[in-house]
Image (cartoon, rainbow, N blue to C red; front, side, top):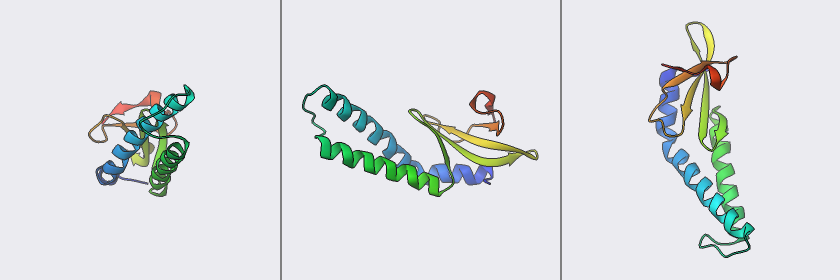
Length: 116
């Protein structure tokens, strides 16, 4: 369980890794598109694709080791189990947000998001 302050601290601390994840995701998408089309890519070939995948999965594993729930990949959506007013909630961070600005009850999902 995370307090809102703990979840915000983790977002700030891990922000460079999250930004790297976003960059890797874009590079991987472009490289796949280039290789699928049978063309050449300035990003490399199959060995580079496998290396990008490995780096990306490494970051996802790192987030999971911190008990962060990765709910989305494009855009990145991260949830942190917590409690608000005695009820289980998930503190919710969505790619593009500066900090955690949302939460939702654990039993309501993304559709139940509310501003803090």
